Length: 200
Image (cartoon, helix red, strand yellow):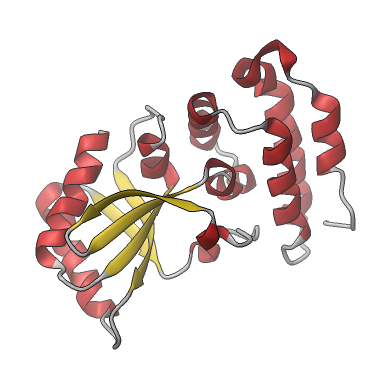
């Protein structure tokens, strides 16, 4: 799937869905729109229907119709938080507009917040996406580490938190210089990610 195909999916959806809605694009499709190039076959997103009333089933039906017509799968939920054991913090305040399709506004998470779920899962495809997006957007590594640290500190305690912290450190150690060059320093990142409380 290409960036153009992602946009075509939402263009087709806007032809079927006429009520105001705000969509937050995440996952591999979000990475694609931020400079990634890894192939993905579906779109993952949060949707907030901005009309009064319960239109969830109607919206779901329209998405299924568009998916069948375009061949692009879609997974969506009312809250990004439902997809991760790691807190996404105040993620709805950390977005920027991508494009409007009719009554549908599509937005992207800022890279640090988009990556919270990926550092928690840390599959190979997640690593590829983060390397590509961070290489394109170049967030400050220390600020990125601080966002991940806050997410860990504000999540319910579980064994997943200790694992996610180790994965975060592994990511910086393995890809830090590749992404940020020779000026990258690991010590401030390690300090930022040091647990302030037991996390599992």
